[in-house]
Length: 419
Ligand SMILES: [Zn+2]
Image 1 (tube, helix red, strand yellow):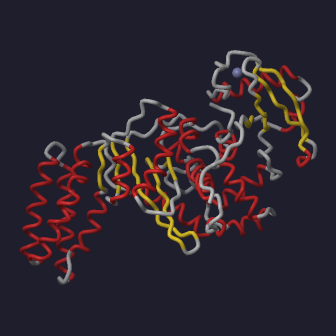
Image 2 (cartoon, protein in one colour):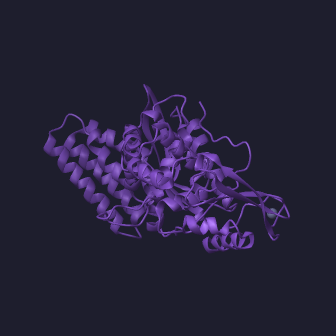
Image 3 (cartoon, protein in one colour):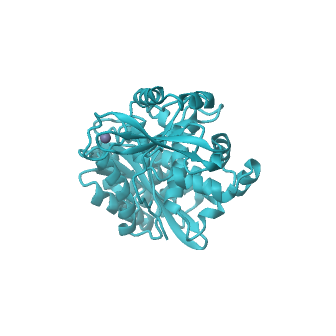
């Protein structure tokens, strides 16, 4: 199974917005104007071209060669070259997709329908393409890492984030999707066939490496998990010194399961009291950690008195196990408190995977496919009646996108030739 992207040579393709096909065709006859247009476009984005490692990019660009794309009715595509390092960039006009015959407007509609949860098969029927072509298109987008695309949008690497795994299936096998979220954006969506610390560490390490690649001094301050052992351990391994907290909402959901063989009204009353405890502790900003320890002890006494010694003991042991993670949340006001936004991201991705038979194929390219879906999650704007109507996740989190056209943004941001 191939879960990682293979790359035989550097992809230095850049997608350039020429506004219209007519403008592009006109510029093909004027080499100087063509180059100026590209440089102006790249500069307006605030991007730089990805030259070879030894080149500082100060040299000149020349038109290098051109070729005609037979599948696109003989459209001319130009390549440009750096005169210093000889790096060659393929310039794709905005109305062409890399290696694909599919028109961008068809791809845009099909991807939007996919993002909305329609199956690959239905999208294929609606837009007269093959399901495999759509699958491959998503995989192509997924060649570019989430960290690269999000930092291109001006988002800072997250000092605090949520980490958890989605349990899914590949045919009859259980699989896991290790995920990192901050607010409305996905920073990592991995794929493993095991739930071990080693497997999760390997997956999350892809994020850590990409992040350190971007910013060598990158440090994580805090991580919120649901308290699953493999997750916590892999976070400690990869981000030593980070505070590892446990989601407070999960604490509330778990309590009733710790109380056995008691009448329902007693269980309900205890849950309400536990809820009040958290509410009070969170309101008291300074004494929060001290207050929590004391209140947890009182609560155990209360459980023992109302629900019996066995329940009291079970709750005490559970508190003992989790309280370090709860303290970690309360000690730092910037720590996320609940993992709700991560659950939402997982639900959104799950709906798509459920509809996609191609995903449930042991020989598929799961990792790049998931990354492609994650790009859509970050870059497709919310619908008109949503809370953040018209904005995409990246914008909600304070990032910027190159244009008002989300699909053009996906094309530009997943281009390989930018730095
Ligand atoms: Zn160069």
